[in-house]
Length: 165
Image (cartoon, rainbow, N blue to C red; front, side, top):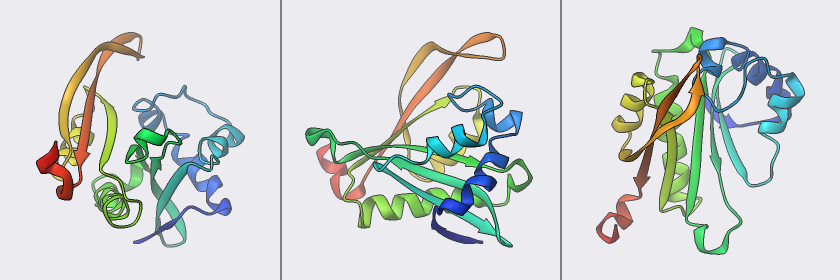
């Protein structure tokens, strides 16, 4: 597996990942995104996206959403998706480790935050393994599969700044 920066030619593989219902069910997007909609998700200049490539095919991505807000530049939100055929093969873990490496050592981030569906137990377990902690619950904050569910708010503070948290 090779972790590298997202390139324009990767958008077809990203669209493929987001074509799976089980992937879309755990995002904030509606199912059946067009290829241009998926491309637009990853085209903003304030994003830092890494992909996992196996045998020439992108099987996952992690994106850090940076901010232009002057007082929040030390913070980013994170999103990740892995092709269902690559679940359980360490792709998500490798992507998260590299995103954290970039955050701590190159992007000068102190705080990385995310929201995860409360019923996405495997994602929550991954985030905890790489150092994220639960900060709170947004009760009934999203609509999924015909019902409202909770979102879990999680963050990871850079080890260099944990004493200040």
